[in-house]
Amino acid sequence: MSRPRRILHVDMDAFFAAVELKRHPELRGRPVVVGGRGDPQSRGVVSTATYEARAFGIHSGMALRLAWRLCPQAVFLPVDFDTYARESERFKAVLQQFSQTIEDAGIDEAYLDVSDAPDPAAVGRAIKQQVQASTGLTCSVGIAPNKLLAKLASDLQKPDGLTLLDEKDIPARVWPLPAGKLLGVGPKTEARLIEMGVATIGELAALPVETLVEHFGEARGRYLHEAAHGRDDSPLITHWEPKSVGREVTFEHDTADMTQVARTLFELAEEATDALRAEAKLARRVTVKLRYANFETHTHTISLPDPGDQHGVIRQAALEGLARFGEGRKVRLVGVRLEFSD
Figure 1 (cartoon, rainbow, N blue to C red):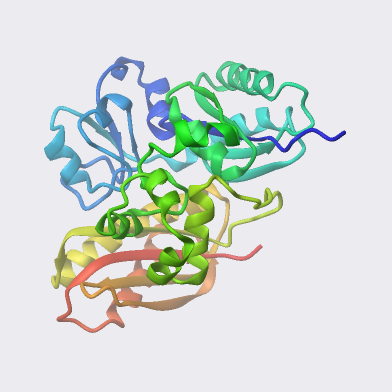
Figure 2 (cartoon, rainbow, N blue to C red):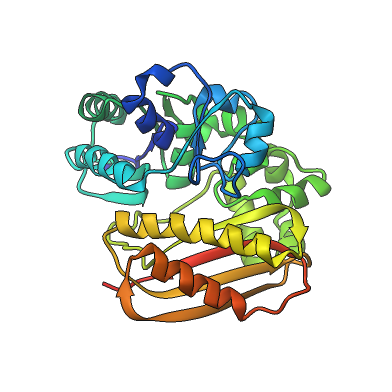
């Protein structure tokens, strides 16, 4: 008789910040924010923050300036993708000792299929011990029947947690959580749900699927219904390779100042180029995205004469793409994407 499906999600704890603390141990116990060039007066965004900084309300994706206003005593450090990529390789080498079926979900997380293990919790404990021994860093592990619940589980006891979730645990442990904790429920969807009187996953689960389809469309509505009940049959994607890297930021206030937009794009192009180099890839196309105040989104793509990873070349291409947009409209978001091929 085959064992039930068991998916294990490994999530490094405050990964970028943890790597920085390893090489700057004197900062332990202090609020540390990693983002952009480490200048809190720049237009960069927070990549991650220590748990001491998070206590002030700082979170990933927040503008650095806002993070500084929330916690001016925090230490701000620049993003160092090359170093983080090396640490990522070390922790993922550990995971390969425990399963042949691994989905690389990002620089600091992965899913493993441990259905064949007689004791998945023992596998989780061993992974945590080995990751810490190999990297000096901690991770949190979630174990559940599917990817959706495993990712939820890994977040429940951070940092350095190990959490098991099963279908029978959903009413008591999942439904009281905010709806925004569900994979795929971003700030916009969460805001719409709150307008509908839905704040928790349990309240979402209580809605008829027809109501969700009416408000969010067929595919999206049915996904929300299934996810709220903890149902997910998606497989682990074991041979996926990214074809682009990108960065984007939403302004605190919509702006028609194209000089401000250009400065922000300049910063994003620098960060995206660093990420490209960490992947050891060469960009072939540079795409600039603007989202306007009315949420209308447009893109322009510049093809490079020769594939490259030089900051100056990519910055110039990004600015050329920006120049193709008209002026006078208020911009809500600016982003850049660097496309590459194998």
